[in-house]
Image: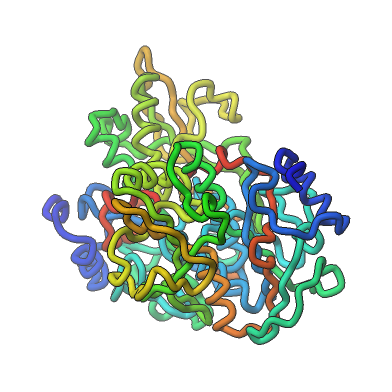
Length: 263
Length: 263
């Protein structure tokens, strides 16, 4: 597995396409931008595109395919969204049906693929700056929480913002904010820091998704908008069908993290 | 007219709504974000939203309305896109038909309004930083040029990027780039500086739109993506109907220029 750390995004996609790799992509193809995948029929795609446009922190759009086209031409020319994700999730009416390794048979002529930026990008930049990323230190999943921050609704899509949390000192939080300013397309700057109850979080030790992590003396919790937000909005809207990546099994693009600066 | 310099965006919109103001908005309601308007039927709206998402420098989305809803709820709650622009342009099959002062009778239940960021925002920031904005000094329209830079196509929409040009010294161009980094939603950083022929411009003295301006010794031309780009793409696509603002007669939002930082 560690041999996949230093391969390119395209090489990792090719392994996924050949079903030689079906695992989690965290820490692999280092330096390449990884992306959340949401696939919806055209009938729901306009509302979802609007939802992303209105909520850029939880839903930072990297690439959206033409109707029926499975190739993300901007971020990975030649790639195929039907085969190049290590593992998929298929939802019908908001219910998880199965977790196939490809969606070639399932794909329809009216489907649209959305690729959204992911926290791996800014976590790489935080680590390079010597800032702590506690869940990586502790080898856990990042803790995620539902908040009382309402997303801007769009058509059939609405719901609360889900946030991820990373503990750090206040000075480190300032430096992290400065770094994340560059990554508007990977969730951008924190949405909150300090008192969890101010955004409707009751207990940091009991995350809604992922695992709790240690908060050390002198540290405060720092909260970023999270890519689970659009998935939750899609599940709540109960579209006839929706395909996503399986959590942690991301689509890896040809873009480099360092190129993901704001336009 | 100068009495409108220091009123709010809402006050200027109310004057437009009552037909008491039908003029150009440049220099009015200073400090409020002004926006380009494009209205399209839902049948073309998804492709246009995609076009904007793929070409954020010429087409920086500020707000997109729900289908049939004329209220831009994010940037101007309570406003009405059918009445609050000082003057409109109505195009059928890409041909200019007329320039009404409102579109109340015309508006259809399947229409979607798009508001796109405008160069007034970053020009204000350049002036505050003491940088030259030559067309304002010379009381002309900004010079605009078609380039050989192709926009990323999306469905029925495609075409070349149109740029605006402001001459400045190389050191000023660096400072301008630094300032415009903050304004991704108002065309962002320059797309080119120096040699015009490198982006397909033959003669700076002969702009495709607007007026030529003086370039002083020691200055280079600095080029920004321009809001005429999406209008040109719409005209070329010849949708059955499209409504825009009349050039210079912008929609003024409730947002302040200083709040238009990248997320």
